Length: 111
Length: 117
Image 1 (tube, rainbow over the protein chains, first blue to last red):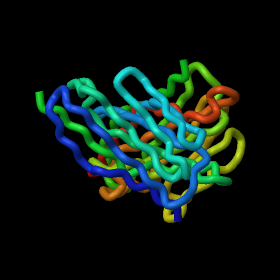
Image 2 (tube, rainbow over the protein chains, first blue to last red):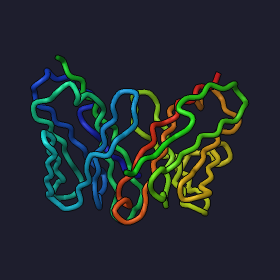
Image 3 (cartoon, helix red, strand yellow):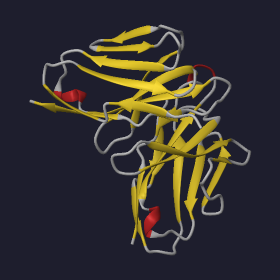
C-alpha cells in the first residue's frame, strides 16, 4: 500500500534557527497537505499544494511540492517557541480519495 | 468557519462497556467524516470514512462490529466502541470535509481520549 514517510522523526533546534521536514511518498500524489499538531492538541490544516513544483509561503513557512509530485518539504525560517509541535504531511494518491498521513516530525525549540 | 466539535473530550470506562463519541460540524455541512486513531507520539491512523446516509467504509484491519460508525446527518457522526478493552485506549479524532471550497480540506475535531480500565 501507499506509504508516506517523513524525516526527521524528531528535531530539536535553537530558537532562531531554521527547520526543515521532508515528506516522501511511495506513489505519485494528486495533492499534498500539511498539518500542525500542538502537544495535546489536534491537527490543524496549514496548506495544500496541487501543482508539480509548486512553492507556497506563509510568513516564515515555505512549502514545496516536488516536480514528480512524490515528495514535499516544509521549511521554517527563524523558528520561534510557538512553532513547537508535530508537523504532518498528508498525501492523496492519484485516483484515490484517501488521505494518507505521514509519520510526522516533532519539532522542539530550545529557548 | 469550518469548526468541528467532539464530545466527550475524554472518557474513562470499565472493560466490557461501550462508549459513544460524537463528532459535529458546527458551521458547515459535512458530506464526509473521517475517524482516526492516534497512539502517543505516533501518526494518525485512518479507521473509517463515512458519508451522510450511507454505510461507513472501514480501513483494512479495523473491526466493523467493534467500531460502529453512524453518519445520520450532515452535521453529526458517531463512533461507538463496543465492549471496550484496555487495548482500545487511545486518542480518537474525527475530521470532516464539506462541499465546494471545503471539499479538499479536512477539519479536525479536538479529539477524545479514551481510557479503558
